[in-house]
Length: 205
Image 1 (cartoon, helix red, strand yellow):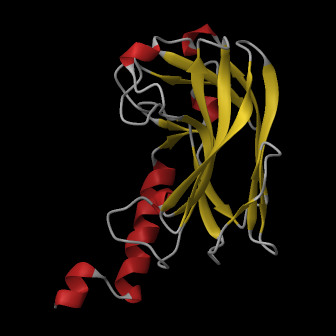
Image 2 (cartoon, helix red, strand yellow):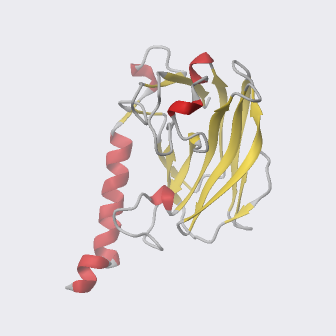
Image 3 (cartoon, helix red, strand yellow):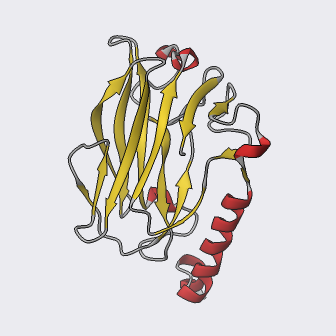
């Protein structure tokens, strides 16, 4: 009984993980139902959109890319947040039972995302990699973008060499053999929610 409570066997864990994935996908609002669908909005005092946007299931993704633009809503008072926290643009989390504690999000075990935060000193959006490998977080600082600049941002996944490459930065080695992933959408935080309404353009097409 103790083993079941603390570490569910594979026959229990797999259905639970798949159920969580289906819930995530089902909660996503498709673009055709949203006015001005290229833009993803996070309301003040929340971490993510009320209904998830631009997410879904992927099988062995090799590249995730989108044309991204941060508008003036992304200029926020860093005194109202943890200034060292990274927000997230998009990325993927990998599903599977290996090294997957119950109750922990899969993308916090094996996942890769593009991160961002406002930098008032440089008057830009700082960009970075935000990666988890077997539950250990790895970050990289990878330059920045100006407000209202449009740029295609990309994550590349090499399953042969087991590396993530975020924004053409240095490769980050991963260890998993998982092939089922789900796409993460826009997220503010870190520890603190958005201090104001935040809008980011994310165009996957």
